[in-house]
Image 1: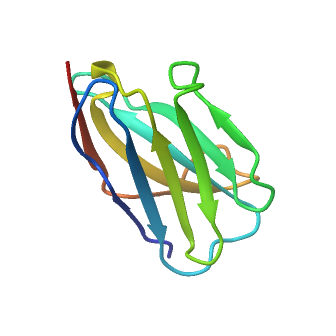
Image 2 (image 1 turned 120 degrees about the horizontal axis):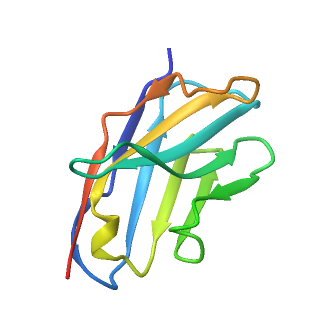
Image 3 (image 1 turned 45 degrees about the horizontal axis):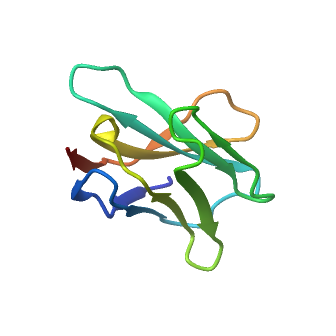
Length: 119
């Protein structure tokens, strides 16, 4: 059973940066895909970014391209989301999740970390 723990959220001003971390317990499978999602108040959860664990292929939502960077650290079994140029519309609870490369849905989720961007 994989357990995911997010950290790094906080309250920042527009234009600031934050780095979120997602620590995974146990060994992450080589065919895993790890992703970041977010959910703002009153809105549905949306995809932010994902990375394939073995090759490091990355994917981004259009709304964050050029501002956010996803990465992973094998040794620490941890995924990161570097968020630069934050905007008030980035305010949300950010969740990390993991799935198998062969699965369409994410089966394991963290509890989330709050990111609040003031204008």
